[in-house]
Structures are given as C-alpha cells and as structure tokens.
Length: 147
Image 1 (cartoon, rainbow, N blue to C red):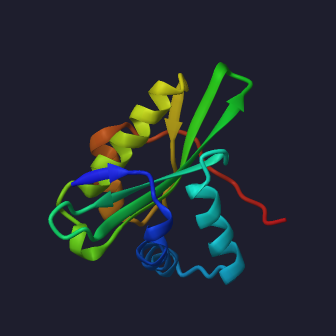
Image 2: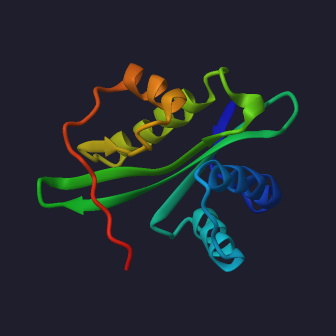
Image 3: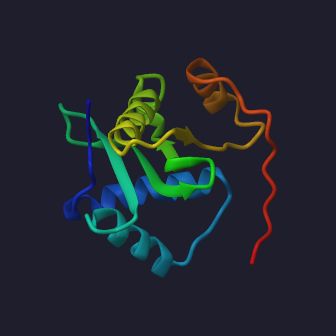
C-alpha cells in the first residue's frame, strides 16, 4: 500500500471515495463544494491537505484523509485537525485507516504541530475500535452550531 498526495488523475477515484464517506454520514454536498475541495487538496499552496491510500498491485484508491493545520492559543506551533477519513469497503481490515492516520501524524510532526486530533460519531464502533487502539478518547464534548 502506498500513501501519497492525491493528483489530478485521481479525481474520479477520489470522488468515489468522498461520495462513500458522505453517504456513510448521510450527508450531501453540492457538486461545486466537492470540486472545490478536490482543487484545494491537489493545490500545494492550499491550507487543506489530502492523502490517499493506493493499492500498489491494482492502482485502486482504498482510502482518503483530509487534514488542516491551524494556530492554537495553547501552542506556539499549532495543531493538526484530521477532518475526514474514509476507507472503501474493499480496503477495510487491511490497515488502511491506520496507515492514513500514521501518515497524517508524520506530517503533523514534520510541521511541528503539538497535537493531532479528530472527531467521529459516538456510535461509529468500527472506527472507534481503531481510534481507541491508537490514542485515548478525550474528555471533551464537541458542540456545533451551523452558520
């Protein structure tokens, strides 16, 4: 498995993964937002980063992750927020999710971020088994207000 940055030629395969991710969370985004997101993750100057997991034998994309770095009032070098993580059904149970998280962690360390964090739905038992094996769950509760 190869973990790498998405490229222009990955648009359709990335789009299928992102659509699977949105469907899992029963979410919809306008096509313009999806296109804008892809443009940002392939633009090396953008503040949103992406990685994909590629099956080296078949060339198929098995998973994706998107992440951002941001300043923090608690850290001189800031934090890394892992915003999206999705593994295609055919990639599950093969270490794809773990490899993507570890690649984001490596990027965060390289950027000298002092924290890597992410959220998931409370009842996402499959993802939580992986996350619980990697880090302890936070004591904090997240609140959201749509604007």
